[in-house]
Length: 446
Image (cartoon, rainbow, N blue to C red):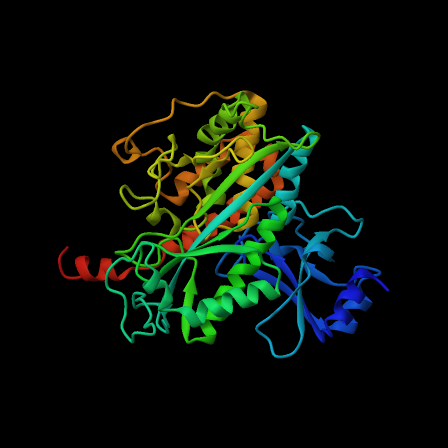
């Protein structure tokens, strides 16, 4: 009996969802009866077209051929470490995240999960092990059945919508207790290791933190957590959205990423010495983030909406200064001891694909460490008083990535080609839409 069979029969599973995270972080894949799933394992019989990794967020494709023009199939290879229950179904159902290979067994390099694997191999080659802890913000909103209308906060237990910001408000978070009771219960059933819940600054905006751990496992958990929160919200008649900037007058939603690097041989945190002082590796990691993050923005802020979040005085960074306990900076160093010394990257949006966001920030830090890049001096005071240095729009970000060969090498040249082609299509589609602002202010005035 295989490990899969033992687990599936032990949980009396009747159906299996075979999930593949696409370029945007959307769950693609196949659903099949448990016995059919087991029957597919010996010869990796489940297949998808390689083009699943080229889809835009709207489900369209680039016009030109950016991979093999034959649109060949790739094989799904379920990761046994990722199998979990799908707790919102009445019938016992499993979900498992899949890697993808070609028929010769070689990995599909444009798969987001493989991109992260490749970055982790770079660390392993140096005897290093990165550890991460994401913090994910999101909004609860009223059901929006017409996309032409703005989103509004949902009605909670008080039967009233939030109209004021309630940062860290206990009673405000308790407005949606039934939703979060399901979220915690379902995450527990699915082995998604979430930690604290807080109410964030926006009306109906929440944040859930993840415990620190291995990057691929944490990317799987964030990927599955997004599904879980959306399903819990739908059960209670509302939406949960991870858009970076879903409401005009509210702050945006981030995916803050705490990261540190340990020696594989000794288990010691490379960011601080035995006396707790910051090391060269720590400084160079920050230097890499400062130098390369602007070019990595298509992975950290992947959508046209992402750049609406990165505004001055908006609880989001506008540059890559770093500082100790400074939440205005793009790179924050929390107060910590030797083994927990870490860098918090505050640039990524909640809309980012977690596999690609982790790959991007770790690749930037890795390049800083191997190239010995020195950072600026840490700042004191507000980084909002300093010039904005992050890209302001998606085309600017794509231009920066196109020119950055070290990131091409770290992330994979084929992957970068595919990402840029898909994002160009998305931006062209966005440019073809006439907004309500244009109709309101230009229709009868110009």
